[in-house]
Length: 156
Image 1: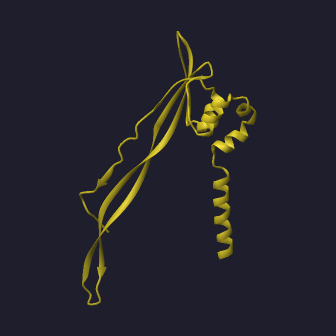
Image 2: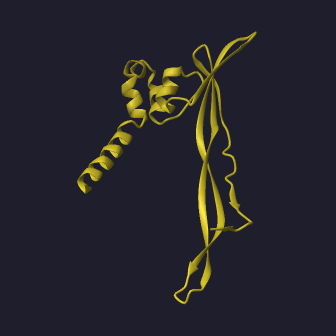
Image 3: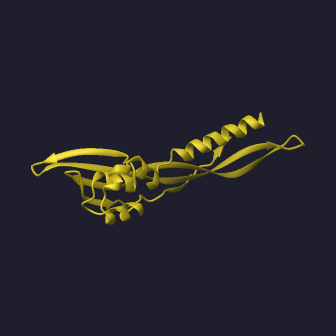
C-alpha cells in the first residue's frame, strides 16, 4: 500500500511539473514565431520582458497565456486586451475553546488560536493590443492582504 501511495504521489508531482508553462516551453510551442522575431525582441522574450510594438506571439512566449482576453472597439478601431491574474492571501484567525475531561470527572476549557487562509484572484496586469501589436500595458497593484482576528470565540 505504501509503495502504491508513493507511486501516486510521484505521478502527481511529475504531471504537475510537466504541465507548467515557462518561457522555454512556450518557445518550443511556437518555435517558428520565436525564430521570426528580431534579435532584440528575442532577448526581451527570453527574459520575460515586454516592449510596446511586440506582436501577440512574442508577448505570449514572454508572459504566457492570459487569464482573460477581451475585445473592444470604438471609432479609432478594434482593441484586444489581455488580462493576467495573480493571487492575494487573506488570513483569518479565531479562538476556539474545547472542553476536555479530567480524570476526577470534572472538565476544563482549553483555548487554541486557529488560522485559516482564503485566496483571492485579482487582475495584476492589463495588456492592450491594436492590430496585433502591443499598444500599451500596465501593472496593477496587489490588493492589501487581510489579516482578520475573530473577536468572538467559538466553542466546540
